[in-house]
Length: 348
Image 1 (cartoon, rainbow, N blue to C red):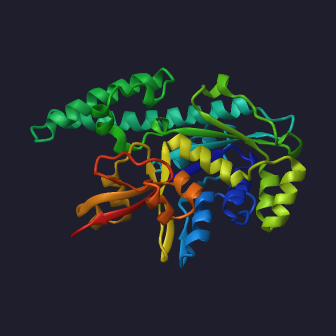
Image 2 (spheres, one colour):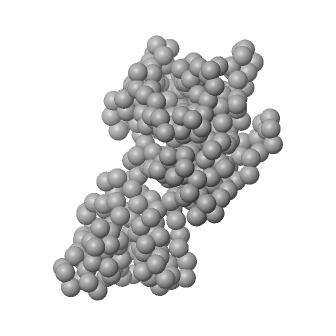
Image 3 (tube, helix red, strand yellow):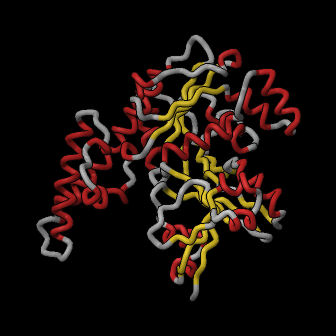
């Protein structure tokens, strides 16, 4: 899972990345794209590690791409932003950090500026693609039918983007999506918003549904405070959080929101060698989840020996779960649930 974190200059996005990853802050004014790996906090893994005492515990991770701060002062800086976006079209989602920690902040304007640049960047891509397809459709090649079908969709996308509508609003089915998804349209990707507030407002929830829509995840936090918390030991962090009225660290809230935005869950594997979380999309079958662990396991899949995490926690161990009839043997078509503890039976 790769998440691009963007925002206007001085929005606090690099401070947020520091808070969720423990990475030191980049030099002021850095124009490089920085990529860091942030572990996914999971209390279930912590508990299972206590039970199994494995040689290693492997958390799921998020690749965070910290983009340079954006400026929209003139056409030159806007063009620079679009060039930047063209470099990260392979990310899975965007997190937009907006500044709300001083009276000068205008997060509605910041959101509008960034969304406009997404639209314009996609429009440039569509225009280029249409020009290329128009030259190809009249050539007698085996791909002519495919090119004509894509050209019809690209023309539809151009019309939507010129009307300031995202690509996602113009795609009607999976067939159309398959034809264009490899191009990495920015306005086809899910978006989450982080509102960076001052310390005295860190417990607030700011409603941006009228600006971003009701389906967009919005979390409110104080990035500078969370960055300080990330540097503390566990005991000091808990005490500081209690004093500030913070119930969960930013890393956990951030990751949970990313998971919901992308429609992800985690299944778990356990043993003396390793306890591990595996991120998958909701709706993934046991057969495909097996392939996440290893292609040989998918190829030789027999059954998925499954225990719900809640049952394991309630009963204490695998032996008790078996005695209580809580261990299930699921087939290829079983849809994996969040927190399932799975042992794949296979033969190759």
